Image (tube, rainbow, N blue to C red):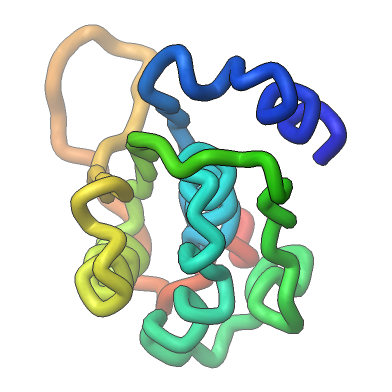
Length: 140
C-alpha cells in the first residue's frame, strides 16, 4: 500500500496507462485489486466482484472471498486508464471470471484470457480437470 500511495503522491501512475498481468487468476480477487489500484477508482470493489462471482463450494485460497480487503485509494489519487490481464486456464474458472467481469461492468478493463504455459514451443491442447470454480486448492 505504501508503494502505491507514494506513486500517487508523485503522480507517477498518471504518466502512462497502468497495465497489470495476473497469471493464474483463480477467483480474480487480486486482479480486481490491481484494477482498483491502477484506475484509482474506488467503485472497483472486491465486494462487488464476490457478489458477481458464481457461488462455489470451494473456499477461496487465503480466504480472499471473506470480508473486505479493498486497496485504499489515496485521497490525492486521480482516476486514470488501466487494463488488467487475468490469465486463467481452468475452463470452469475462466467461465466464472468472464461472467463476473460482465456482471460488474469491469470487462473493458479486466481482460479474462484462457491460456496456459508449456515447456514446448508448439501450440497444443492442454487438458484440465473439471473442477468447480476455485479448484486451485486441488493442487493440480
